[in-house]
Image (cartoon, each protein chain N blue to C red):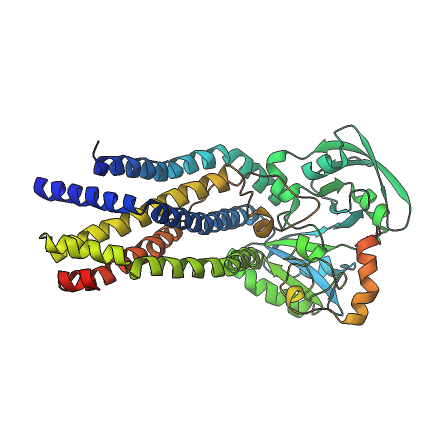
Length: 378
Length: 109
């Protein structure tokens, strides 16, 4: 064993000496290789963490949200719908929700106004999300005016600002009393934006949705499962979009690496010829080149991955944030908790380290099995 | 020091960095537990259905609650989330009428 280790050490010594003879070319390759792993790992780490966090947070969203559609567009829920739903077996709890959008021309941003029924907000007061606090420069106790869609000016006192830790789901929220909401949007009495409901038996959610559609044919039930799947596909799509944009760079690197690994330079051929002439065995030459491929690709993988981790979780993915998160005037500031998918990292390892190491061996095997004299003369 | 030993040290450091990312991830996850719980509680309390990622239009603010998806819902050159807008241009006549409005409007989107 000790002899084997000693032999490998000598091979590595020789490999490093050989690599240092073409220092600029090999350092350039290592840099580009590391950069490629960094980009791919950043995209993978970021989208996986965002997807996991969204799934975790939205696991508490309503089991079913029922909307009413008129001519294919979302419309208000008229009186009587809640009674009809109450008669459907399996519906445990239901609640009419009031929410809508408000465009603030001061900062050119959209807010989500909401009248939560289980929060005690006094009339004339509002609770705002942290992004709104930032964009309008307001704090608890300040007054703020909004011009409603009917042209009337409404002034509210900010009672509270929602905690910064909840910014991912609350950045643009403006919570207010139900009567303030109805007065602001001129919402008709007993009408709701939609209905949120929970089902007694989670196995029956789909059956309850079918019953809802037959009882109220103009309704559209949205299941929590569909909400979660929507977000999974949105982030998959964004990840795919980013990778599609990068595909040209990946292909260019592939050609560069293949050319470097598979095509031997005259100098390298002469080196192999000399090694064979002074008594190296074919196996030793292949082992030396194996170490060369492994050292470069493994180091590129480790450096690229660690840099990607620091970039995503300690520098908020500044390079890819706009593409992966989306763009908006009001944007939440949040730090993603790192969720690392081992399989994803293993796949990245496999596709970055193995092909290069394997590609190095093929031409070396071909050259190393040829007569030294022919190799040196070619 | 022989080059093989130097390579071993470099690889040990890189492998150490790799392992440390998992340790650091576990630490950051533990630190964010309280914030995540607070966020989940708010979602359950208010019945929220979407994270605040894209607030520029209603079908991007609440992709799960929007009308059954159709492109150009707000106006033909609105920034939109669906790929249709980047692949299919809106009709030229409509675009002409809306382009100025898009750049200058202060009215609700």
